[in-house]
Length: 433
Image (cartoon, rainbow, N blue to C red; front, side, top):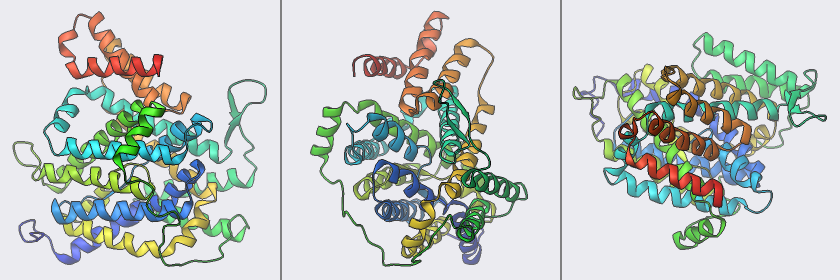
């Protein structure tokens, strides 16, 4: 099934690679409930929903596409769900309505993945804007990590921010967790982020910041299936004018998965000589299915995890690596009470947000800064996202500025027609909706 001999690998090597990938990305089962619970979603609901969507998406990648790639709820998208959609509405939009937008985005994503339009959409977006979206999300979630730890706080005298009390227990433990984890990463220790969280949690436990009453329990969904009817979900989107939110979910997931998939496939030697990915259509269905199913149970959109590259570096070349990751996540579903306790301590999860943000902003190295018509849209995307706590608003400013500047420069033919359409839709969204 996995063609191990063809890919010059063994069962043992694939299992070790799967374990390596699991250790580098398992932090998501702690961080995701911590973020989505602020939107009102029960933490144990998010935990199991995270496991379900990860297992389904990753099994698809392994069994159907035969890729050593793991799928899980994407960092940045979970923060967008909580802070930009639910909390920013100040009570008008609850998490059920937000999940309706994720559900519809997932369904649209499935349709796009079954057609060549997904690839055309990727080609229509300029490379600089793609890089700026990733970098902007990195700044956004790093800012959230600093703020939740109390390292950055609101200024009482102005509408700006100021440095918090660095002697507080939360700030001190966050700084320790951040430095310790980064040192492990610099030393190239496998599973550095997960190990850092464990060490930080142990310190939190012995200092009284973390209380653990129970470690294991049978997996359960306290609220059952949250979303299943596409008609009612579409009705909610129309009622609350969440078109921009749906589009942002699709756009960010699109770039995250495609970029990660190509990068990991190249690292694994799976890309053909003509530059094409084998079984690409099957692989592209993985994140869209996981996003749809994840919304049904209670989690934000899924994407391919760049941490899969750790497993590839350990020798993973086939879908057996992904299947191993899925099995390990299924086993982790029995540790819900422990995860619930740990995710409630911001000093444990904040270092992860800061580190992942730093990793994501590295994409700006590929941006072409040579001319203002390229620079300003990128700058707007990266600046607006953290300042407005909205990924969709940052994307909107960049997608509006880009075609305007290209037209002013006389290079309107270099802009894909879809980008003009997106600009018009974003203007309507910002001005009228």
